[in-house]
Length: 200
Image (spheres, rainbow, N blue to C red):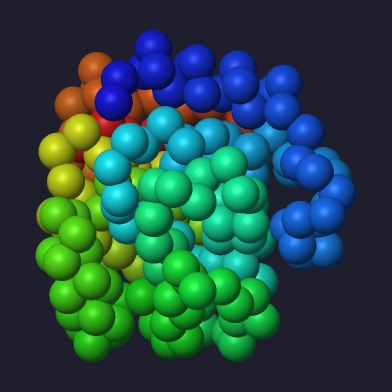
């Protein structure tokens, strides 16, 4: 994966419209279709079976956009979603893990699945939006990403730093162990926020 390919995927996502029959329509508003389309097209670009991890999957919207499209069924992807809240989305290729993403037991479960399929090929980090747990998630899950995979972090903005916190999401993104040439911020992918993408 490289940023030229990422840009191509983003362009495809902009032009795409999610079919109305997909469960994804019931889970998400129309305002973020490009954001969810990006994940769907990213999955479509991976030519071998792989594991996608979403940390902070809420209602399973991203998984629905990836898995509810018949155009990618032949890839045999598995999506793992972690959230502290109950996850109402279900699919034969979706594994829902309810709990704290920083819990070593949760991380061990993800690793056992990832190891069986040669590692994660993408991680979408959309969880607490606080510095310390985001750093911990990076420490736990980035080593599970196979070479050529990507890490996507949502909401890399000054808004995600409480007054009492010495550091926020911008600091987290600046400090992750990826060279500047291998990470990029996108302001147009998620309406009202900034998305960071790192090539691993």
